[in-house]
Length: 174
Image (tube, rainbow, N blue to C red; front, top):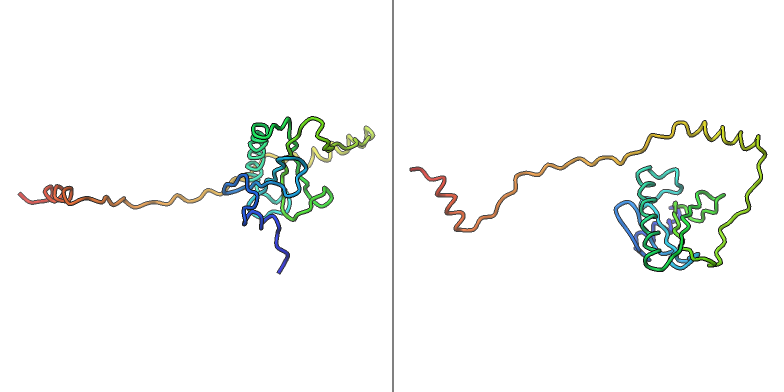
């Protein structure tokens, strides 16, 4: 049997939970980058962003926005970084896609800046064309499967002895 997913175990135990619905789960980071660092993830085990259905990706970013607003209101955040390490090359440590909401304050000492690369004009143009060509098909959106509507039978109305007597009077023959 394979190694258990640490994130799935956190979801199951609800350790550090700050938000949960039927699709996503948010919990406080055990090793936070800043006070109030929240990790948001899909409840279904999905190792990378590309494997998460579009409608759940939408939920993740909608909830990240709401959690970010909560950080502003409750702990006095002055900004937030919303960060995903997608893939080993990007620093992903868990085999479960995670969205980090990191509350920020001015001069908090957290440095997420990187040194920009200088690209030649020709190289930049080539990359632009390649990505543009690959993204031409964007537009289709995976929808959540609609659940069938369950039909309910007529509700049985409980009647007391007096109501029962009145109903029987309606049914009697003259």
